[in-house]
Image (cartoon, rainbow, N blue to C red; front, side, top):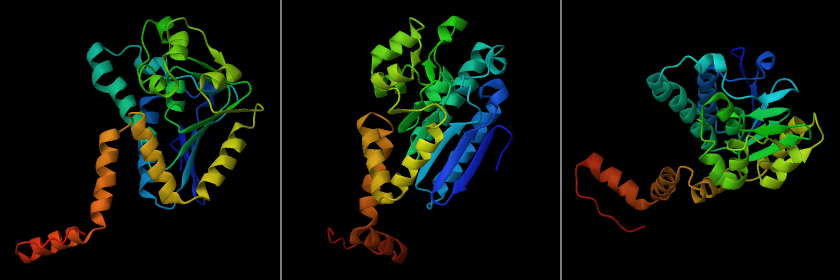
Length: 259
């Protein structure tokens, strides 16, 4: 399935999301954000998918962020109401999906592209990858959680270097800073990500997904929903919930057993 910009594919238990706009260095448009959200919703509904790989077409760029033509003329209210909030909603959705998400990064990952990569649980970069937050050169600020999720994930020091001083990171510097988890030879990031996804998919899927949620919650990602979801899951397996539902349907007082 493809809308010409976002391509979804599935091979067994592994799903692939591909940014497919190489002529524009995979810069993101509103239509691509909408397609990303629809794709994540599709993946979440499919219990047979155990791992997800995010990559991009072409070797020049993973993603150079938001398409300037899509936001440059936005008025303040439009920027607030739609562009930034829509991007946050999509990126939050990606970061919080049940299945582990692995990003395969080749070439440039700048601005919103780096913020997109930061939604992944694991990030693998080709040796020629480069990372940066150049928004200040355009008179704006990181808008899709570069100053929030990225800081929670890797700490403020490398984010300040990129966002304040405008200094980019090459692949090895990004690995040392924790921006990526592994560096592989240029052109092999996708193969490495698929190999990792295969290993993850062979493990206990419920345990893997629960562990991801716990780690995310420890880092402040969707903590409230994680706690309530896990508690609700425990409650769903008790005799008390079955008695509570039965008593409601039978219009009688419940006789709870504390089990």
